[in-house]
Amino acid sequence: MFGHRKRVPSDTAPALSAVGWSGPGSVSLAVRFAGVREQASRALALPYSEGMSQNVVLIRSAELSNVAQYAYAATAPAEARLIFLAGACPLNLDGSTAGVGDYSAQASKAMENLVIALHAAGARLDDVLSTRVLVASSNQSDLVKTWAVVREAFGTHDVPSTLIGVTVLGYTDQLVEIEAVAAVID
Image 1: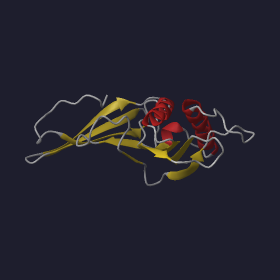
Image 2 (image 1 turned 90 degrees about the horizontal axis):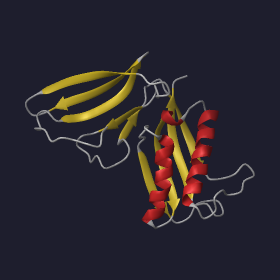
Image 3 (image 1 turned 180 degrees about the horizontal axis):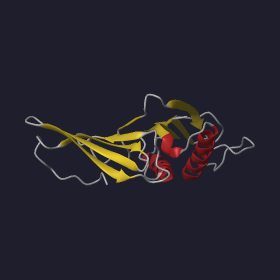
């Protein structure tokens, strides 16, 4: 949806677009047009899809590269309750590390644990405002493997994310950790 752009004159190019919930049964897509000669606002109402967050607005800017597979920013309403999650680790219930030596398996287990923590706090994946994905590797292909799992888990919720290669993580044989911030309205 955001991956293809057509060049248009700067006086009509969208400066910022945002998708958000605007009430029962609809979602609004707002595009603000800002230019030297003209400033205007346009909004498009789209049908609300069950499961889509009513709390988080993901923001993309036409002034930034569209290569990234995530929004560059996210907002939540002032009345939202913020949830700060500790890094989700690839730990089994008994405390052992899952998927030893396997970045994809550890990312999958960390995402599973993140979902459990979100549910315990009254949230779900599409309530997430941002993530930080830590990968114990200096090899970019290991980061890419990890990111593929995280990206798939979030589906169309292109949450702003930072992917970081680190030297070591806290648990024995741990390769992946995923931090998140979410917002819900009680």
